Image (tube, rainbow, N blue to C red):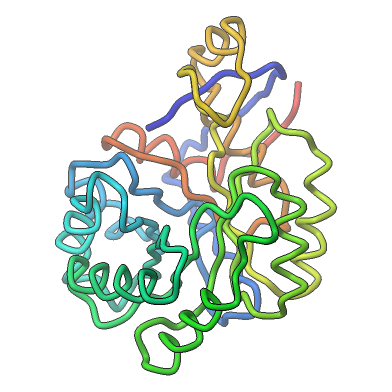
Length: 272
């Protein structure tokens, strides 16, 4: 997955026994999700998704645009026999009601399911992008039984977007970038969402890893330090320490990364 490095130092200790799964309520949805979910964006090996579900991870996230549509197809095949045991989300980049609803129908077909548990309006960067017709699309989809809960995602300008989303009194879940490398001024907005009963899902929890990522002004020193053993697990634990966050969606491309991320639910967090 996307693995990273940090300007802070962290300590973790891996448990001797298999990690115990931690479940957190997802806002007021009534869903209880593992605090470590599965971000499927860059996963191409369906066996990793299958094994994650068999081990107890119950939140899986994809999107219409991931891998040109192939990601939804892979995720759907991997979870086909497990669909009723997991929470499944996808997203649309559509900015009109018609395009969003068309994306939803395609997502359902590719995933091989009759509904999404959460359907996100994806990549909202400014409050004015939360258009009324997109809210109408989500409401219609919910009335038709195609989705259970309405979500919105934000990668940049997160605090402003989160507060604007809360003001709409519409969304059940917010998916936001959140990691140790960001301005911690975001945390009051997270607390406001938690108080309002809106579910919070954290993405980009590895801060881009040791790669150059467009959302983060990482330095060569930052990227080099994040290649050290334990850095990724520590970064994930840093996010999980915040109980306002209901679940996380780190990327996992192989079984080794799956095993490492699973330990984050049990390994105690301790800043050095």
